[in-house]
Length: 357
Image (cartoon, rainbow, N blue to C red):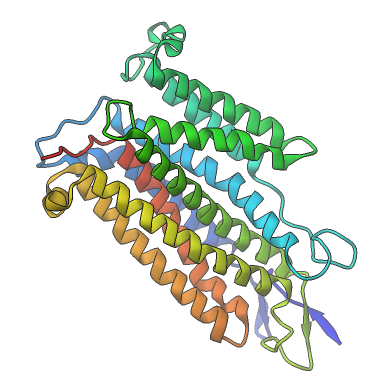
């Protein structure tokens, strides 16, 4: 005999079901406010007392860059988890007799947000890296005359194509324009005047790809588990925490956790290498506290440490708890912390680079 796992609320004998929707909405609102305030006011806070000067409109650029990074994470994570779901034992998702269907894609909305952010960043490049105060100040033709302008145009067009692909019958094709955005970001972050720019671009390419798969993948896994949780059978004989309770949801979470461990290792290695290229070992400790870039990087490292601790907690629950889906509790906190990492990463790109002493 089987029952359907309830997810809408908790019912007891004293009253109707308790709905967590209000608390979740408040939490999302708080996170959105933080995601806006950190980039807008972060530059002035990071630069305070360093003697460095921020570029014009650094707060707006940081916000646009954070939106662009988030717009990369969402569709890449959906494609990534879709492949993991197809690798689960049994029939493919959505097939009669197989696993329940995956949640509705957010990729078209992410592509629209990415297009707007890329367009805003391109307008800044078109005015000589100044904040435009009117359409007459934007030199669109000038974008074709510079390397940064061409890369900005590439990102605008890539998000436009990705949105069209997400609406098509073959949404997996959007992986190509999204890859073009990552390549453009990697090249933009390391101009030709930099020492060994191709090495730096390669590190950023791997770092950004793995980060997008990790963040977007975890978000879509949690969305999938929430959808599947209302449709999975729970064995009455074994109880809600018995061996059959996890179902495909627990299997998907376990498969993601194994891949996420590799992604975390790659993110850590490329992040450390990139930081040492910009801050030589002998100057790291000083620049972490005396420069805006170093302070923001330190905040990002601390957030990643929190994320890693939450990931380990989730992995422990996944292996040891009677119900593997108990790992969703730390995983939800992990995806929130990862969202803050994305926002801080956007802020990091808008700050002046550290000085090589």
